[in-house]
Every structure is written in C-alpha cells, then in structure tokens.
Image (cartoon, rainbow, N blue to C red; front, side, top):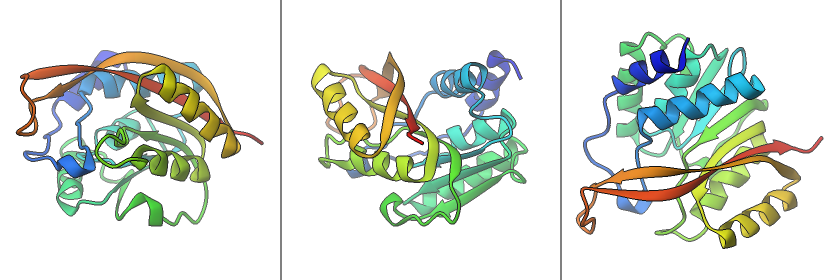
Length: 207
C-alpha cells in the first residue's frame, strides 16, 4: 500500500463527536497517522507481519492503519466504550475486522499474556493529569519490543523522558518533531485550530 492510499483510507474514518478533556483526547489526523505508520514500516519493518498495539486507541486510526499495512494482529486499547464502538464500526467499514481486537480498560491494568512487537500511541500529554503520559509509556515499554510514542516537544521534556526511558531498560533510537493540529474541541479553546510541537519517539527495549 502506498502512503497516499493509506492516507485516503484513514481519512474515511469516522471521528468521535465528543471528546473528554480529562483524558486529553486529541484525535490524530489521518495524514500524521499514515506517515507515522508508513515510516515505521518502510524504515524499520515494525508493522507488516507484526503484532501491533495502540494504547488509547480512540477511534482506532492507528490500529486500523496498522492492519491495512499488513500487521498480523492489531490491538486497540481504550478506557471508553464509546471510543471502541466507533473503532469497531470504522474497522468494519475498512474491512479489517478479522485482523483487529479491541480491549476496554485502563492501560495501567492491562494484562498482556505475551509481548507484542510494536506499540504505536498518541498518549495524553500529561497537561491535565500530571504523569499521564508516563503511565502510557511505562506500559508500552513493558509489553513491546518497539514503541512509537508522541509527547509534547520541549528540551526539558526530552531530558526527562530520556532519563525515564533509560530507567525502564530501554533507549531512544529516533526522535522526530512535527506540528500537531488541535481543533476547537473544548470550551476553553479559543482558536479554530491550534498547532502544537510534538515529538515522536522510537524506543527499543534493551536486550
């Protein structure tokens, strides 16, 4: 599948009609989700024929995208049942229902019987709930050989996360910064669209 074909497919995904500010739900645009997954596959072979897990899957864009790129199994985890209902509907509409599984629950209590190959996650940024991003990161590193994780971009945050990742027995192998658009989702949002600098970390568990 070409990058543009993946983008077109993911652009057809039905997004949630309401978001929870306490969960810092910021939907990942189809162009960004497609680019992250496509690069993960083309540069590192981290998607095709792999077991891929999306922590905090929302409407399922990363989970479904991984399935479209040939993941052997794609697992979406979210704490909201309405998010998983949307994910299931989107999966059916794109013909990936035989490849994906949906799990309702908080990531901290997630029990995985066997390690997954790759985690791809747009986790909470930890602005509304301090440390929320680290909870996702810890779980990802504990269950996956490779993690792709998005975090707010700043020098201070990079130093902090790098130290925490190394404490967890893992290492950052790649770091890319891009602009993430956040629409007017909540009452306190004044702008129609706000651009936020986000870092995408590729993290490998040390052997």
